[in-house]
Amino acid sequence: MTLEFVIIILSLALSAFFSGMEIAYVSANKIHIEIEKKQETFLAKLLARLTKKPSKFIATMLIGNNIALVIYGFFMGDVLVNWF
View (cartoon, rainbow, N blue to C red):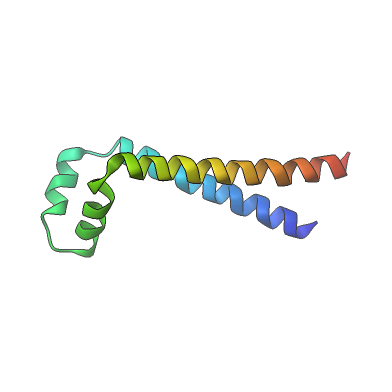
């Protein structure tokens, strides 16, 4: 029973992570990102890599969120069926 709760908490955390990344990317200031990418820092390299293919990045976030929510639904359903 505790393994199910750990998986439920982990899947909710992953869903929150993917949702937060998606919202942060969509609402980010594009000019600030372009200025940041011109610098030679680790963050600039990471931003350049993430913004190179925006549709692939968004698709990855949505797929990750869907997988996390399916896992959550499966285990939460199992817990609720056994509980009642």
